[in-house]
Image (cartoon, rainbow, N blue to C red):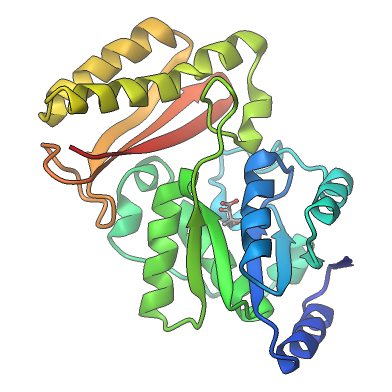
Length: 282
Ligand code: PAF
């Protein structure tokens, strides 16, 4: 397994692999691996000849008062874990390599970036799209794999790839959860033991909504109110950022669960902003 930190060497390595006709997959990450990351890598490993991952805490996707500095980093451990799951090549650039001092170009996807996380993180997806497109241009993968926990990110990246004719196939992988249901996230390390206990209620609330839909509750407001009440009782340390029912691909709010509907939640629990989602099927 090679660890490469500069774009020029990475391109050379990729060009060599491409000449041999190998199918390259890319798993972009911000490091500090948990089982969720490793599951994406194992999946990508199984559908390609060469597995490239990137480890880069991307400054442009953090807002001015967000946790860029505090975001957990552990490159040494990440390298060991990546090697265990059979990664071939790690791209781990420094911020200056990706964003030289004279950097001026950003990628903005319209509309889809205004919903859900886009409301409280207005520049987040511009940063995500910019870095992801750069990673695609640098690594030239045939396949790229993203987790469904960041559902909105996935939908936006698919849109960007379609709109800009990027020759990459986007694949997704289901949310990986802790045994009590909490979606795995690098930000879970911010939680105190009590916050961690309560945070498992986020997924329990989503499952409650699923049960209510199965019992015939379809009205968006009724579902949301039941959930707000559930969260207030079970996660007193939490503060809901948003709790929304949206079309799974257009991300527009829906008022009634008629077809497949995404229920998405973002909640502050202590220092952590946690997101989760479930696809409701009436
Ligand atoms: O989902 C993430 O970890 C990040 O947003 C990504 C896709 C690696 C871009 O920095």
